[in-house]
Image 1 (cartoon, rainbow, N blue to C red):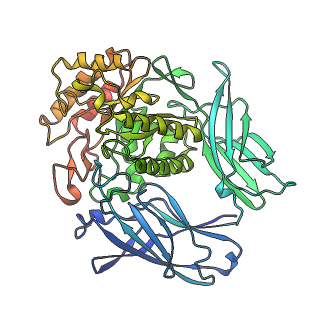
Image 2: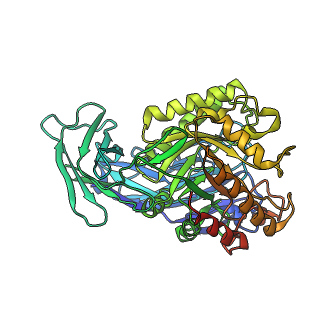
Length: 538
């Protein structure tokens, strides 16, 4: 049996001051620390009973931005460095005092640093320091099902019949030869059991076939619960069965051609919440995406499990990306190490979500035409797929359509989908009619599907207001629809967003005015225009 205890109430200390706070928390939306970059301390205490003497005790963080050092009763226990949007856990079994209160201290750092991704201030979102997602104690058996990971995919037999395939990675689970693990798969909506079997744990992985499953899709997001039972312990993991693939310049979901109609939301932009925003606000924003007619979105950085839970339930496809933006211009060897460390966690923590159909390995590197960047994309694509063959792997480029690069190679052509941020006539000059340049870029992709991964208007740097934003939407989508090689688009962005690069506002209000809604979610005319355009058939 696994016991989980949320740790919500903490004391926050910075610059000689302290106050009581609740987790999740960021100091970057509070009056005295809006601009603060550096270290701060979180402190709490918790009682751990003697009854857990034979158990393993873990302190679990859903995300701390960007680095954390964890101390238990004054002794260093562990932490993480530079992976501020990813979950981690610290084994504190040998540090706690059973039958008494235990002091927990977390030193958090959000200062710009070279040896992390994102690097220094090379990112276009908020630098919100703090324990930005939940914290809990997890008490489990020394040999626990909690280590097990599952991946689900589909085997399509014909137009009306599909089997589900389930890969179970045991990750060192130690089961006696005469024992086994019971695997039960249930329909998430009805609770009906569709598979039940006692499984021998032999080797690193077991693969099971589940006959006659219903597939997860954007219109009918069918989900199943995988229930694993061993001894007194039961673990439940929610999955969906689907396929995603590219062929002949098109994208196919469950064997059916699908055109991506997308919009990107930049989380953490409400000035009262920042990156510690409550789930209710995240869901409000996700609903805005879905209600605009989106079937696809992307995230520049990793999100919480609960965000992907909603996407699973509501049929919103996602590309989740490593937050590697612009620099180093060409990936260094250390960059690759950092990227692979994040990829490992992404696959392990989020690999069961059917809504995540793509992994992203980088965004807008300045030297994307150079061999070093191309090699990085090839290497990361292979690295992701060694662990997870159920998803596409992509890189997002702005260099693909630049005039000086039209006859050059580009790193985005080495992902499964070519992804191009189209800011022709805006950030990037164009000496010919824009529609002609877009068609040239599309032809350059040959048999690789091209998705416009960003287009939009960034104020106040660029002028014209939301009226111009509406014009860009209509004109660009008209061109995209007429260009056969284009397999979809992503409007950027749903919202004006808080960012350390913002040209408007100060402190927690520093932002880019780039959205079809404001920081609080109030819609602009371009949101209605986006909805209308998403209703068009392709």
